[in-house]
Image (cartoon, helix red, strand yellow):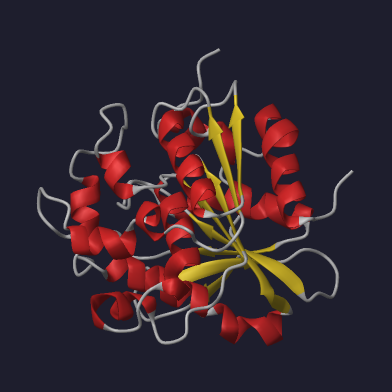
Length: 283
């Protein structure tokens, strides 16, 4: 059976939105909050959507995942942010936006009963890159260009779940079998056709290992958007650097099955892997 396509994924009925909360003043500066039943405080999954860092996609397609994770005991904070093809969103706007959106959890924690000692990032595709980068953000230098995207007091992340994640910018850009546009990574880094090494040093998770947090990387063996070999190479690199990395490769899955909670892939492979990773409730 062929893997699910983006068009097939988008044909399905949309999932309902969560509680919309602004984290800034721009039209893309908001998130959607969902909480599991019970009084809390609840651990939190910051859900980060993909789309090659462009307006190809927004957080709406990740509402299925954001709505399913509370069943595993996690509150979800699904974030929106400016993409690189929007006006005023050149380097390093996307990184600053994601950092500010994550740090906004401090303003939500008490009134929404959130446990900020247990915050994981959950990212799909290019959102997987941002999920890994967010975990590495606390280790960036506090001065210079790195300090500008790090922020003054970045919230510490306790783990990363990458779903079909882009894990390394330089490696992904160099692979002929990836499906993001040729200019996707150069546009992200704002460096023209070349990849500025000094920006890779602060934006590429492969250059930032060890990240210092556990990582669960789930990819489909049939993924023709983010090559499984790309994720495999990062898992080996991060493990060799001292990180605790669990890599799950699902034989019958492509790029979108891993974020489709109505599929057997989610119920049999993805959800159990996340449940084991976070130590959440389960059968």
